[in-house]
Image (cartoon, rainbow, N blue to C red):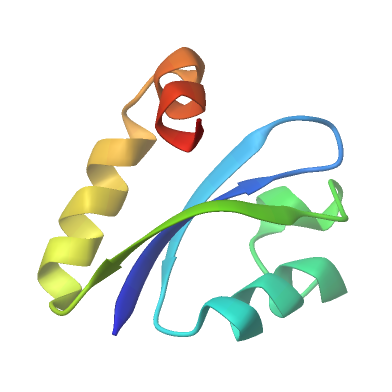
Length: 78
């Protein structure tokens, strides 16, 4: 299974990513081994995810979510 996820960082910003293992990816972000963006913004909390069978569809959705405004992402999370 493939996932598109949104994390809320300690400073209130949102980070969007892709993974095939949500728990491991969240742990990687919180240990400092995740994305460079989240390293200085720990701890992070998983606030949203979508599940896909196809890696291509997941990556296309990740791109689409990254293009959303903060308000649109907040609406998606709510």
